[in-house]
Image (cartoon, rainbow, N blue to C red; front, top):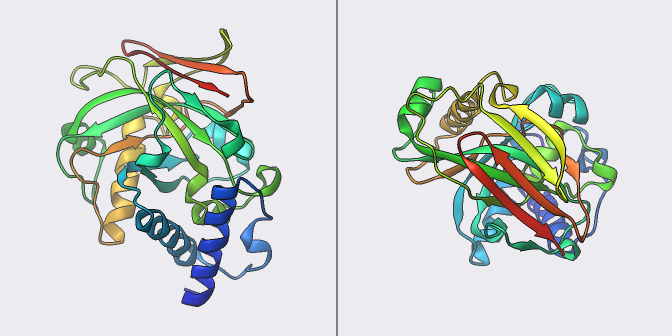
Length: 262
């Protein structure tokens, strides 16, 4: 690590305040260009600690920048990982307040719910599928705290990979005898299809993102507990939204989930 604990706590407080007050900031590597990956995840951990101290509860994890479309859109080459707390959750069909966010975008995802613990190193797709209770449609609302959505990978890791809100719904689907690579998705905004894709857009198989997450956590002495909800990553490019928009995700054999922006 390159940064002092005092600096890490200061950066966490700054990014946490930006999220709570819905105001943006230049990316933190502008002032700390020497920060390394351990520093970035340490800032993320410190933000998580602040949220838990306020009463939030960890409900799962997320993989970010896992599709080639998203990597191209954001100009990066490596997936990143973050966490989900209950305060991010929006009920299926519920409302998301735009005033609480900076510049929200939505992306369609396949969400996994685990029935047994997943732990790296050495986690692979078969292990993920064996540990999966079911998959379900999910929409993630991302909202980078960085001005104009401009960031590098270390800055976005520190910012909990732009996590803001999420919704899941539709029909839970068991993974046995289903090829998640060919599952098709359609994202609609105000009744108009705006993005299309299939599960294979996420690292060739969405379970690959979960395996990478488990191995990432394993290297840090952590695991994915049973009962976790995991967003496996955006299948398409993110779509900007504003107050008045209604967004629906339709996933083959899983039904749909939706939310509205007010």
